[in-house]
Image 1 (cartoon, rainbow, N blue to C red):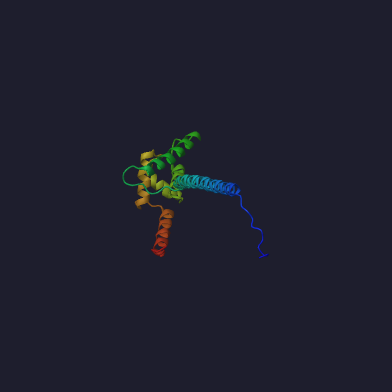
Image 2 (cartoon, rainbow, N blue to C red; image 1 turned 60 degrees about the horizontal axis):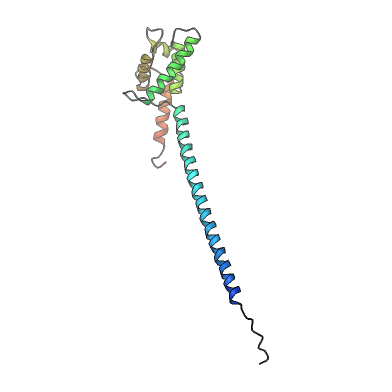
Length: 172
C-alpha cells in the first residue's frame, strides 16, 4: 500500500498547550460577557433613575401650570392660591397701590383659573370693599368655582370642558 501517506504525529504537549489556550480564551470571553452584563445592568439602573427624575420633574412642571379646585378644607391648592395672591399683593404695594383691588383681583383670578373676569364682575366680587386680603380672596375664589359668583368666561370654559368630556368615549 503505497497510498499510505505518512501519518502525522501529534505532539501531546502541543495539543495540551492548544487546549489550555482555548480554555483561557473561553474563560476570557465569559468574563467579558459578564462585564458587559454588569455594564448593561448599570445602564438600565441609570436609565430608570433618569426616567424617575424626569417623571417627577414633569409632574412638578404640570403642577405649576394649573391650579385645581381646592377642597373645602385647606390643602396644597390653597397654598398655591395664597402664594399667587401674595405675589400680586406685593407687586401692587411696590407700585404704590393700597393692596389687591379690582385690577389685581382680575389678574389673580386670571392666573388661578385661566379665564379673565370682566371689570364689572370684579367690582361685584369685591362688593363694598376697595381691597381684599388673602382670606377674602379665597372665599371669592371658592364662590367663583362653585358658581356662587358670576364669572361668565369661567362658566363658558367649564361648560365647554364638560361637553368635551361627555363627547369622549370611556375607552379613550
